[in-house]
Length: 295
Length: 295
Image 1: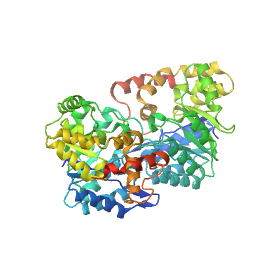
Image 2 (image 1 turned 90 degrees about the vertical axis):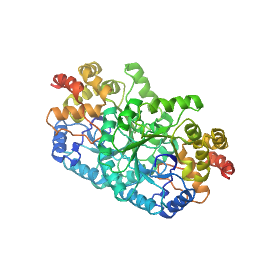
Image 3 (image 1 turned 120 degrees about the vertical axis):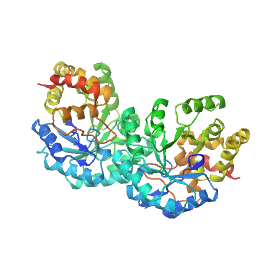
């Protein structure tokens, strides 16, 4: 389940609730493209902004509309108690795997993070992907800690925050981390600008934000890279360079949410306040670059 | 309300719920010391780890046991929708003021943070204190943004994250920020190691973690500083230097929670997992320094 291209859809919402119709519309685009898995309620799915009840309902819809594609559910929360509830909900509803980041308010220690994964992993009957995203969690995993957590039962993948841009350095980074991991734990790259180079460098999976809205494009890149056609994968990714620049500047969530609004796939707005999609000059700039997303 | 020494009590809890008896016990220590205000459900009160219902109940208890001392309630949440609910609850229950930090998962822009304060302030009938705590929110306020937010109706104080250790630099920092603020908006220092120097440098308030457990000691320091006895305030604070070192090393919440456990004021543990109080050598080290807290 934790190999190939995993699509991270938005959870379209406004201040009154989740837009279930739009969410199902996004799921259909994704399942039609026959992606390798769908990671619902990740950062792009604005998981931590939703109530337990809302997350329950979104999980239910995702499983119902999965068309046989594995569904991975983000179960992160500030409090271990809530993570355990969410893990339980996801499993009851038929999720195939879960994704867990060490979300924090008070900065966490290594021991606290290890204990969190230990408690959650030992409660699970489905596989878990460790979600390493220092931009949102402000927690820095060491490779040693990754290795310790990866040895826990049920842990089967690590979603890493990008790799070096240069292929040899990227290969070295993947090799370095892999040395700490059991052989059945995959490494998935995230940060879409690093998707192609990450796969070319030996990552097993690409956890993709763009894949949640443009799954066909991302499947092409992933298929090329995983078939050893690294130059083709690079070329396909490089075509999107202006978009990657926007991701790095404004955050991938705001950019993808804005495109979904522009395409009429969701209402405007579709993010939970205080988050806002792009406006003014940034929105106009993004609009001019939409043609690079036409196949 | 946003002047003098404001005490930030713990909300003692474990995985099954909040310990109301211990919370009331802590409140009694604080009210006996006749502090200037009590900031319930701040970072030290582990606000973001609690459900809306739990925060409602804690607010109710605090107002009920306030003994005439103004009660300020932390209303921060990841989502604006939830902040508005919490503001409403706090006001309905009789809180005298509210405290709001720009808690984030996705890093926030200046415009998003301004809009958050604008929406919340315009919904309020009680005064608001802006809570600037980059260690937990990862948001950096500029002085310009502080000025813009401080001009909003209902905003009456800013809780700043420390000041330079050296008194002249601290005075300069307070003067610099003050230039951006309306005259009815106070500045309160936080980060207990900076309490005495902050007040000596012209801050109007000290938002204190230690004040939630040792209110008498902190009132002595605050009274001295606010009466112009800056040397006395410094001396009283300097006596606690080993404790301040522990705060800086392990985080004030873990240190204070551990002391409350040691004193038997709460059960062990009293923090929400994944947070853990100190153990091993750090706990032993802290135990040896408890005598400096005897008057």
